[in-house]
Structures are given as C-alpha cells and as structure tokens.
Image 1 (cartoon, rainbow, N blue to C red):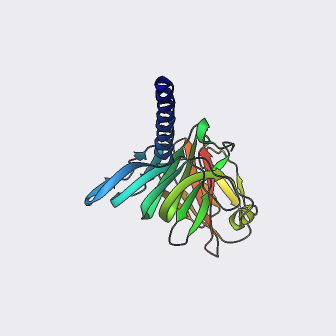
Image 2: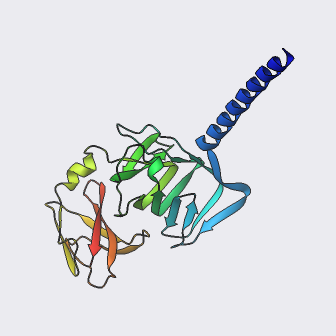
Image 3: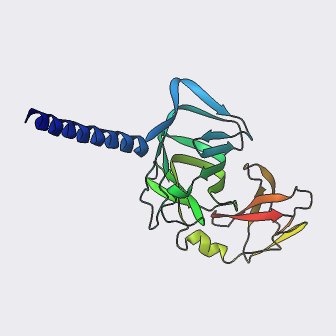
Length: 243
C-alpha cells in the first residue's frame, strides 16, 4: 500500500515538473531580450556598418547612435492590417527615431507561418499607433530588405504578406520604368512631374533629378533603389538592376 502511494506521488510530482518545464520553455520562446543598452551607455553604428540583432540587421546611411533601449524577439505572429505576419516580431521598449538606411529581416522555415517568400517588411510606429508596409528590395529567399530614405520611427518590426493594392501601388501602376535591367540609361514614363532619387542598398543617395532619363552607366553592377516623389509628396520606391 505504501509503495503504491509513493508511486502515485512520484507520478504527480513528475507531471508537475513536466508542466513547469513546458511553461518555462514557452515563456522563453515567447519573448527573449536580445539587446540592452543602459542609461549610461550608447551604441553607434557607423555609416555603411551593420548591427545584427539576432537576425534583424540595421544598416544606417549615416552614423547613427542608439541610447538606452531594450530590444526583444518574440516568436509569435502579430495582427497586421488585413494580412498575416510571420511568426517572429522584434520589439523595442522605446522607439528608434530618425533612422535612414536599410533594414533586413532574416527568417527560417519554422517562422514563415504558411506565408510565401513574396513578403514585405512591416514597421510599427507607436506615435501613429499603426503598421506601415515597405516592399522587399532584395531577390533572396529567407531575407526581406527595405531601404528608407525618409526618417523612420521604429517600435516593432516583422514581415507579412504583401498587402492588397494601396494608394501608392495604384499610383505606381501609372509609371513605366524601362529598360530594367539596364547597362546604361533608364527611362521613366509618367505623365506628371516627378523628383527622382537613386540610392544604393545602404540608403546612400547617388543622384537626384527631375529628368525622367537617368544615366547609370558609371555605376557598379548590382541592385539600386529608385525613389519617385510625386507632386503630392507621395513617395514610391522601385528596384533597379544595373547589369
């Protein structure tokens, strides 16, 4: 009888331990602090340099200093505007402000949440309490990269499905860029006025012009971003390939 009671107690204790382990592992997976900068510290990323925070890469176009911040990674999907997200989100306890350059989000199969590799970066800005979508500028799988030429405020970063047609996308349908790829000149066919700016993938400005013919013959082979600013100050970015 005593032996039977002891065995039952051991089984109960074993189940409790298993449950505690499951809860601990679940919490560990749910959110992990991956970067902490205290009140007395600062981290400067030099122009052209890269900060890799557990798969989230920041490449500023100018020297950029981060003060007193904590970055965490949560292995879960978040609610975006009418679209699904991958099962990983990066969260900052205080917004990064006035960031220009590129952001790359790396992911693996287990984090895709049934999405395809055709995805966009989504940035949450706590000042506006909204997610904004930014198109992918690289052609590689398992990475999504966006280039930001206007100052950006960042509170959360994730990747989600390419959303339905937005105002910017609708305007972009009125533009034809050809030839692309090109080895010498690209032309922009659009009926209205445009301010065109060409950037490399580090977010560094290479040229700016109101002309709809851009000479890229002196550039190295590779991928560039052509930013088109409309008369209403709306901006749309296009991937240009120099061959």
